[in-house]
Each structure stands twice: as structure tokens, then as C-alpha cells.
Image (cartoon, rainbow, N blue to C red; front, side, top):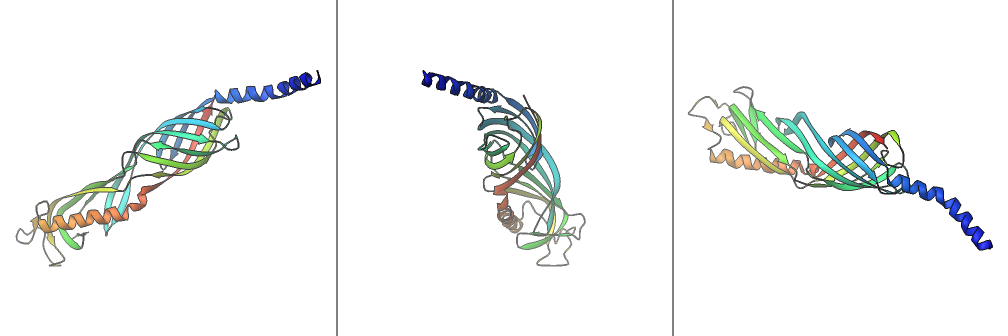
Length: 243
């Protein structure tokens, strides 16, 4: 009899906690994030006190500059990717360890052109003076990117409005650089005073074998210098509503 009473007391004490665990498992949340992975919108579903599933979409476009071998490229960073994450909450609270996948890595479009007939570009190992010399290309970091990071806030272990912070790394593929050239130029390495507007001294860069060889060297330089992009830092702040 005493054992039955003890068991009943234990069940009564455990019941609120069990109900709370079930309630947490049914919680969901909507989030809005802003950071180095673009603007993100996501939905979080709480499996239990320790695990959340999170699916979202990140997008954005940012303009800036990118320098390589003394060439100042106009750079456009483009982000467009769905994401699927698992959030592990080891303390059943706001702190979480996140792992998952982005369906697309950031892309960087590059564009540079000479502003006058006296400006030179160092392409590969040689300098060229251009008459509207233009370089167009981009850096492709692959179609998918695994993610690993830590964060605080935004979990389904709470309800109502809240904020979050994320810090992690997107593991992209090795940079794949494409670069094309157009316009006319003259070889300033061979003749520092050359005139790119003089047909006798200049050439069409798209069909000149030496220039195209140096252009491939420039592609290699860009690939080597953009190796750090393989570990794309993700830093974001978020606003959430949990229900």
C-alpha cells in the first residue's frame, strides 16, 4: 500500500514536467535575421526541450570593392539560399549549437575598367595600358554549403517575442573564378610609354594570345587570394516570435 501511495505521489510530481515537455515540443516560431548570410526568414519547430528544427530562406545583394594585384574591382555580393538547421539546446534553454546546410553559397560578381588611356592594369605578371579595357567575372563558391555554429535565443523553449544572436561558419567549396576581358590595350611592361589608342601599338585583348595567357594567371591569383572564402563567417542578429 505504501508503495502504491509513493508511486502516485511521484506521478503527480512528474505530471506537470511531462506536460510542459509535451507543450514545448509543439511550439513553433517565426524569425527574421540580418547578417553576413543576408536577410533571413525562417520557421522553427520544437521537437522537445533539447532539439529544434529550423527551415528558412536567405537573400540579399551588397555592393562594394575588391582589390587584386592593384586592380580595384566593383564587387556585387549576391546571396540566395534555402537553409535547413538542427538546433541542439544542451541546457534546455536559449543557448544552442546549430548544424545544417545552405543550398547555395554567396556569389561575387566582379567588374573593372580603365577610366582613361593612361591607367594601367596589372594582369597576371604584366602591366597593360587600356583604351576602355574591361575585366568582367566572378567568384563561385559552390551550390551547397554545410554550416556549424553557436547561438543564443530564438529557441522554442520560450514564447512571445525574443531576440537572437548567431556566430558560425559556412563551409563553401574551393573558389571557382571566371574572368573575361574586352577592349584594346598595349603592353606597358614592354613599352611604358605605349599608346593604347594607336593601332600600331595596341591590340584587341580578346584575341591576343599573350594577354589571354596573363589573364589566366590573373584568374589563378584571384583563386589563391579568395581561398579564405571557403570558410564564410556567419554573424547575425534576429527578431523572433514564438507561439
